[in-house]
Amino acid sequence: MEAAGGQLEAALLHIMQRHHHQSLHQRNKTERAKVDAVKSAARVADLLVATVDGGVQELYINERRIEFEARALLATIARYKKQTDQWLAATNAINSVLKEIGDFENWMKIMDFDCKSINAAIRNIHQS
Image (spheres, rainbow, N blue to C red):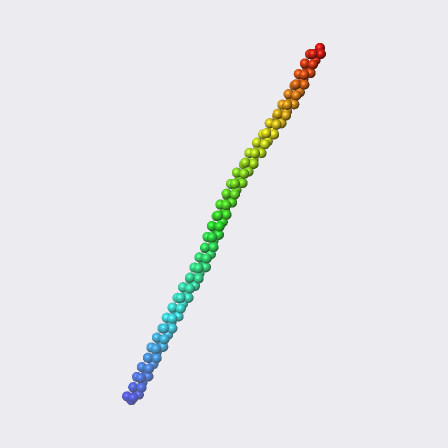
């Protein structure tokens, strides 16, 4: 019976050792899976951050380009406004000169008429 008891004890010891070995193997396998999962999660997080950062960077670049173009457009508008004001001043000056020429022409016609009237009056006086 002692031999049967020794075999039983050896079998139980073998079962415990096998269970312990399988448990260690399973724990190692679980730990590797956990490490792999953490690495994969970190990689996914890095990729998501890179994607979001890339979008933010692109938006920032576009915003800077739009601001630059807006400033350039404002400068162009100011230049065109100044040029338009100069053209308007030149047009007003030309209109004023034309008005003065018209006034001078009208004055000349009046003077011509007055001179002819005076000349006719003097002739009438001489002929009388």
